[in-house]
Amino acid sequence: MMGRSVSFVRRLGASVVDGIWRLGFATRFMVLLLVYSGQSFRRLHLTIREIYFSGVLSLLIIIVSGLFVGMVLGLQGYETLQRFGSGDALGVLVALSLTRELGPVVAGLLFASRAGSAVTAEIGLMKTTEQLKAMDMMAVSPIARVVAPRFWGGVISMPFLAAIFSTMGVVGGWLIGVVFIGVDAGAFWSQMQAAVDFRYDVLNGVIKSVVFGVAVSLIAVFEGYDCTPTAEGVSRAITRTVVSSALAILALDFVLTSFMFRG
Amino acid sequence: MSRTTLDLWVGLFVLIGAAALLFLSLRVGNLSSANFAETYPIRVQFDNIGGLKVRAPVKSAGVVVGRVSDIRLDIESYRAQVIMDLDKRFEFPRDTVASILTSGLLGEQYIGLDAGADDEMLKGGDGLPIGQSAVVLEKLIGQFMFNKAAE
Image 1 (cartoon, rainbow over the protein chains, first blue to last red):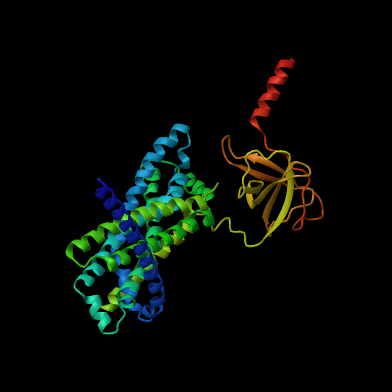
Image 2: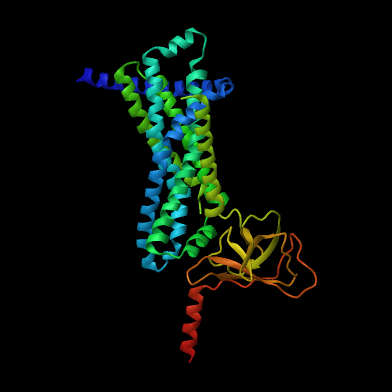
């Protein structure tokens, strides 16, 4: 009995120490990443390559899901709005919910599962096959050569992807609302333009997507770099990337929203 | 994949992203219509501002000429002090009347400016005479009931 409770306390202590150690390691890792960024920017094609892999190759999923999210918003929004006789306000509903929330958040979640997981897998496998160590032996910093370009590729891609998502969503809402249901096109656009403010809505959405891009990319490269160098360790790291990115995006979204849109 | 194709794709991606941002700010947002390059502040006091909010539009003859930038309670007169930023391109006479109006039955509230006939124009920092307050529905109903009871 006594022995069991002592071992429980010991395990608790070990997990707390481990958690704090990981947090400290992640912070040191981030500082190193920023320090080596200058070095990796001098070889810009590395970063451009990563923009291709995490940005360009995510385009299709972002465009298609943006279109569908917008179309669903159009259908559901019109269904509810027309009960109050304000079907004309459909454009406002679609545009505001996309630019403020859905664009950055859903694009961030898709980005984490499409590009973040790939980055973790790549870095994790490099670590498992000791490619990172080999680089170190050749006096090439793996953070400057492998990690920093992947981080910046994600950070740069994310705002563009979120903007594309929101745009496709608005187009989807327009398609359903104006083309299929028959909301007046003039009212759709003019009410939207009257209600959506550039600085308050659009710019805040862009800021959100930049923050999510930093969070997701950092989690992805860190989990890859930190993974246990086995096949199982890599698969766990990928799972952790997707789960903690999703949690980080939703939690950060709440914090940012409470600062940005206080009414 | 060769480097030139890679560069081409990334360039295309950035272009599409920039076009999407441009679409959001110009077509969805109101950057093109409500971007007042230079503005001047005008003060006006109201007995009751109803549901007027900061960033509400200021309209003259239905045309947006500015936005409400600040609302606070003047502790000396216990009136609402509203500061609005008007576009430099539009000048108004000193005896302009400001009133709080509602667009539509359930729409948002805005400030309407009715230009006066004074020769002198308003300058930045000037104050208008007390504006016409918002119509508060409860008061209107109360007045109606009172009148009915008096008949």
